[in-house]
Length: 371
Image (cartoon, rainbow, N blue to C red; front, side, top):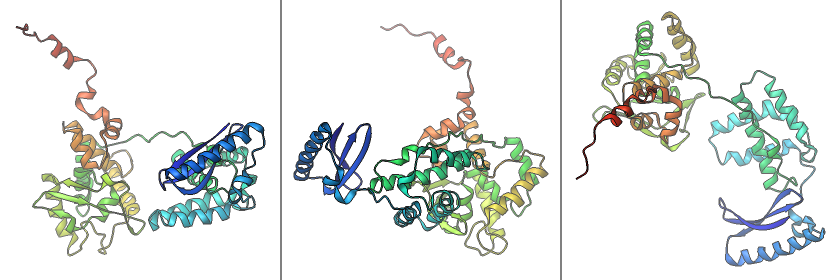
């Protein structure tokens, strides 16, 4: 049982972190982190410690404006959360968030008051998601939105305790990758209509995400410098920002990619887009996946797999050819080598050797005696 002065580093404001009989509450002071303000809150913390020890602690007396607004419904909380998110994410991301919440969360929790929530209610909600058609990853996306809103309710003093820890995410395993082998890639490209062959030659030769490749314009291609500037994506009919800073990258143009781009100039005509649809606009990735990618796989007699495996094919072929993993990670836009090595480790030649022969060769070499 204790009260401690803490600082929220995001806003540089002080708050009291109070623990009473195993429960934790945060009381935000709105005061900047200065020596004088810390002294004021330290005195209040000592007083609260004494009251907790004596059993007389009453939060309403110390923090009258932060007592829970118990009649708030989850729908009201959602509206407040949505306004907050509108200032933090892109319009497209906000639309995605709204679709998730309004389809999966509001029908269950919308009219309920926040003080009516219980762990059993969240357990039943999660069980309903798992028992449906959603994948573990999709279940976790829904649960993450719910946790964010519950966390905000606690931080803004609408509930007495943090309800978000009652929402436990589902364990998930990343789907296995299914890159094409060198021989399979050749068969696939042979089965691909000439109209779309340059698109996939570029995809296999750069590791660009489908959304990045669809958004690509000719002004982003520097033939003299042999670079492609990846700066945006295209999703649901809108230009989108790339998720992380490392995704903003300059991709090397290899000779095979250059030949494909030169062939694509004739196909693209006068479009500013490198890979326009027949009407000159942005390609619909869902249609590309269904009508072109899957059709060519079937024609080539290859196993059906997701379109994203063009990116996996680039990575695995580069690593299998002995390219520096650091260069491959840079081409893909990974922030560190960790993701690359955990995802594609078995395709790195030296990592696939498990007999110790390289080490044995070094250990077996005679060493010159020290003089």
